[in-house]
Image 1 (cartoon, helix red, strand yellow):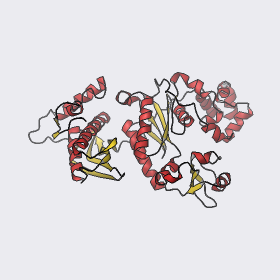
Image 2: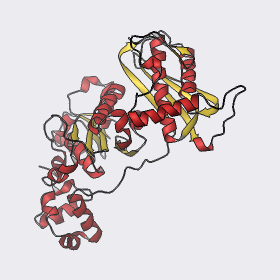
Image 3: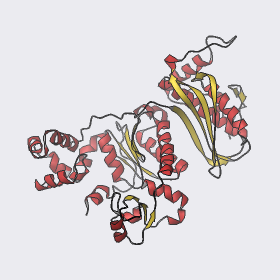
Image 4: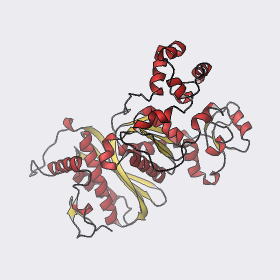
Length: 423
């Protein structure tokens, strides 16, 4: 079995998630990302060995489908070797602009879950979901939500590792590929790690693996049982201590967001396409409420409100409007989103997805606000801040617009709009 096959051999069989208490770190990795994106436009190739990469004499495999991997084909392999291993493989040239566009959509999903997103590449990222537990549920439930949204919105699959540290979460996502979720309980890290090959540890390349194997160290457990002084002598001071810590599941690194938020948004994919304008407005209300709460929670205000409207045929239209002053109020976001929807020409058009986003963010502390003539000094802002306090204390949904709480009641006017009954 090759080193790469050892690292990617199937994990445990599907079953109910293990105890995820204290496991606030997720590693999300798209499955055969480049190939998966290509299959969106070439569904006839599903189930076949497909390779993305340069077809010339010096071409290299950028990605391989799982069908191609059964023949030993993997990324970074020379294409000539890949063709020898799998002559029947379908080779497609890479289209990096397409992959970047899908990646942006995936990262948008991640950031709708938590602002603590640390991308590692186009197709993978760490997420710290500790702050989202009250709003979205337990870590494993959030992982399942991410998998579902990636599949629904982008048409591809991903695998999610759930753990108490970044290192273990990344290993877990690898072990449950493709299209899986694996929880490594906080008190089960050593049990999970020690049967793995030493090559699974970060920092163990082929040369270090050879050195460790020459010492008779085949598994992470073997390495963990080796005296630290021996490891320092054989692989160096820093590397020896690093590997010793990882072998015992110690990884103190936190998830670091790569950049400040440029926008904050939320979107919803419907189970059934919706054409009723009042139902669409109702969803815009729900999304505006979420976006406003996230803005206030992050200490941001924004000047531009945008809506995303995706038709049944996947055609997506975006519209945006810049406000006179930056805002974090759901009331203002909702009013602008409705106006953009009404001006889009898509009223009564079946939609499969709607989204609301606020862009051009600045710190709320740096924003100056001019009261409109006759506007009281207390009102909507204070009301929404009270809603935020209630949500933090009693959970999301403890206080919400009446129109979103009365499934069988009469219509309620909210934020200046009359909303339909729940259906």
